[in-house]
Length: 510
Image (cartoon, rainbow, N blue to C red; front, side, top):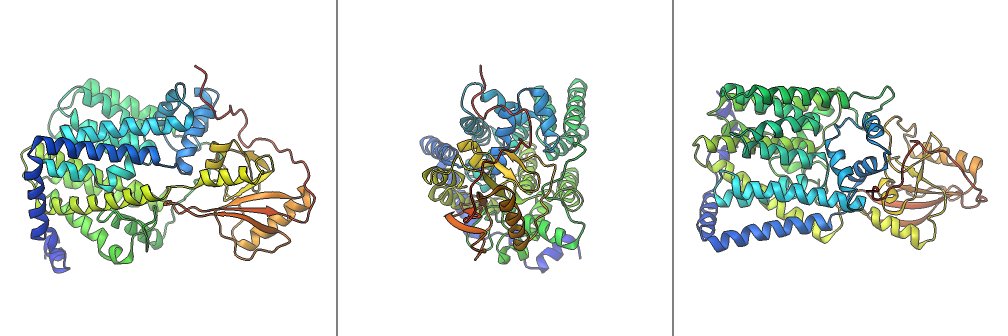
């Protein structure tokens, strides 16, 4: 029994013969969009939705961290030193820093996302070889509409460059775009190798471009050499459990609607999806690359690499694995350029991911992605901005710091931070451990305040008293505010910065 026969036996034959109503719907949509006015109106609507999502989006801690590093570094040399704790090449940070010379830092995040989104969506809607209906479904997919283009980070820039590489495939501009890919992220560097492999197979290598790409890869590799004391935020576990986590995240590629129950970003998918979703996506990938052995090898090789990376180096989240889906889309793009016909299985999947994109859009128009702004406003309303604050876990205060300028003490290090340097992992591993630590801190420093994402049920009243609870947004991170040592005297506390030499989080002087 071959691989496809086995999949049909397991009940995944619908990828070979999708429901007729889906095929009929896409054909009907293509006929409707053949009218130029309707096509232009549909494109305008998708772009308007994309812009609204970006403008309404409330960043989360990774987004805040990137702009804080880019702006608070006093110079480029310092920024490069700080990035050795991040594991990311500097291109995205350079873009944010450059924009912060003309607009305030938080606006720079949105401006960068808007520029990338309009270029990428324009490339899909205008320059891609898909039918009009397929372009519309791609542009509204959860991957593009939200994950890559609304949530603003280096993946946003990398996704744009990856798409532009296919737009400029037969032009010299391809090699410039290719050389920039390793400067976005390690995974984009790997994908750039895959593109070079296709060029090599097609005998279209341009050696000056290859030289530029190799040089860029070497520089990118140098910039991510880890600092001696770096501690990864999410270290991979060499265990079967880590493989299961990876498989659950892979299921999000088949039906990208995250959340066990109610949709929630970065959560495992519903178990009813997780049971079959990962295998369904692999079946689709197998089907779509059946005529191109090289494409199949590159796609499944990249997929296997994400598993090895998750287990051995750093746990990859669903947002990272969605690059596999984008790579599949672009390989289909390349096949269409070579004359391949539309396939029902691919169209069936596009309808699913488009539906998920619209559902995610509605959720994020209805509720904030992150509620750090509400937490910062509550601290101001309570008149507590000038008080001494601690955050737990240590990364949860980044958004409040960016919005209000408030710095937080980092547990165990007795220093103040606005962003996190990944050189330490908290020794607190339980609620009892947290209470014990806070009790010692009260004895040393007196009364202070705590911001945490942990919902501390019935904490000892002599140690903690709740003063506010800010519900979580779509990212799932709530903000709980407590007074620590309510019966103790409040004493002045002066602690050094965890990362010395920071400049203020404001627009850079022109």
